[in-house]
Image (cartoon, rainbow, N blue to C red; front, side):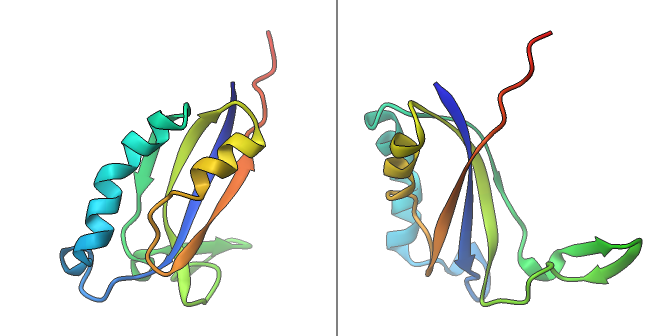
Amino acid sequence: MAQFAVFIYEAEIPGGWENAPKELLEAHEAFPGKVEKLGAKILNGLALQPAGTAKNVRDGAVGDGPFADTRESIGGAFVLEAKDLDHALEVAKVVPVNDGGVEVRPLFDAPEA
């Protein structure tokens, strides 16, 4: 099985997750079961604080906010174990996202010692 990083880009929910639509919360609860049903496995994941809490560092200078100033920001990420890229993309299609999208990238294989 191959490993993939899955990045979730979405619009922030005003007032945070406490104000998320019920359908979105239910979709998040159902997601692990969908992944398992598709024959893939989530190895670990991250849910990020709002983009306004981000700091960026470029050429030694620290700035406020994420690098990109867009409507969508990275809201979370996870490492997915799947058969291949096509399989990972099947899973990506069922990731619950609030007005955004998903990016899938293969991870490098660890070199053998």
